[in-house]
Length: 160
Image (tube, rainbow, N blue to C red; front, top):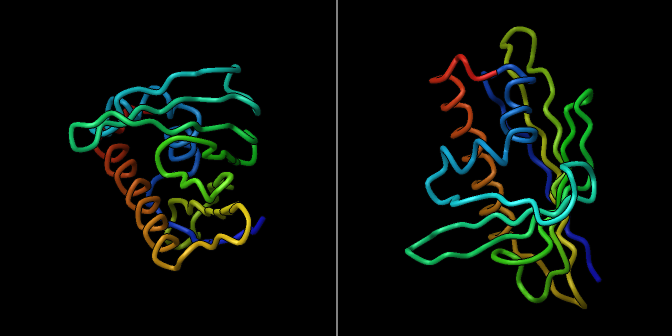
């Protein structure tokens, strides 16, 4: 088994607590309402804490597909939300799982806002590798999602 790691940070003008709540704590409710391709998020097992498994159903190109999302760690005080993709769309047969370690921190004092730091670990089977193209594509998707949520939060100041 191989492990390939990719780290990056996405700045946001949204306060850390709001961004964390939207992207981690309220994910199940918020994403199906505002992300067109997310049809629903169902809890398959657990109560939202570590060990919880969620099924995220996506509709892309008229086809319904899903991702199995396992909560690995939730620490509201530190604004940490770690999860794995353990099955479904986006997990090639040559990969065991993809682990996303995320933390939302304060942005620089002179700028404000927040920074969402992500450390992605790809666990592969055998001698399978992860290409630079896949790393960059996933980074672009994650950064785009942060900016999408940021735009929603800025347009909806009453969302806490």
